[in-house]
Image (cartoon, rainbow, N blue to C red; front, side, top):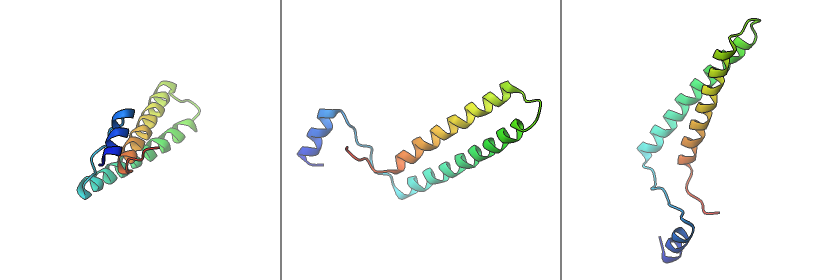
Length: 87
C-alpha cells in the first residue's frame, strides 16, 4: 500500500480486509454452499406449507424470517470472497 492508498484509507475511514488464504476461501465457499442448501430447504418447506389449506401462520412467518436471515448471511459471506474495491 502506497502513500496515496493510506491517505485515501485514512481520509474516508475505509479499512481494507486482509487477503484470504486459499484454505479460508475454500472454507467460505463450503459454508456458503451449506447455507444455500438450508435456504433451498426452507424455501421448499414454505411452499409446501403454503399449499395446504390450514397453515400455521406463526410458523410460516418464523420460517420466512429464518430464510431471510440465511439469505443475508450468504450475501455477507459472498462479499468476503470479493476483493475490496474503492469506488
